[in-house]
Image (cartoon, rainbow, N blue to C red; front, side, top):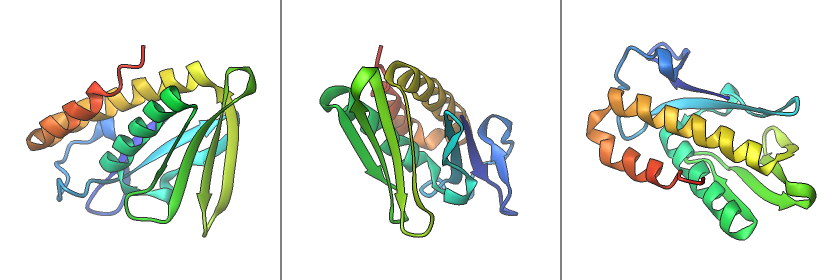
Length: 148
């Protein structure tokens, strides 16, 4: 799983390699790549306000853990991402978009949540260094990531 920020030229840079401050701290453009068992769920084609998208994913995973299902829409696009618990400790992850159709794959719930927890913490840690004025918002989001 990799998180990217979009630079001024429109290129995607892995967040841990970013050496620039995003031009608009309220709309941090970027993307998340997520592949599950050989199925691409998220990719750079689905770029958006990536800090908001990560926060939405964290909330959806909290809902999954509490209720067995969590979902979110992308910040600025009609794209839906759903996490639904199914049999055998598995989670069905579904992305639905009018332009690209549906992508779905199942994965072990503990494996998924551990990977998302690690990736979200790393993302917000790097972003806090790049945009210190958003520290409180990012810290509030990462406090929700304590799924252990």
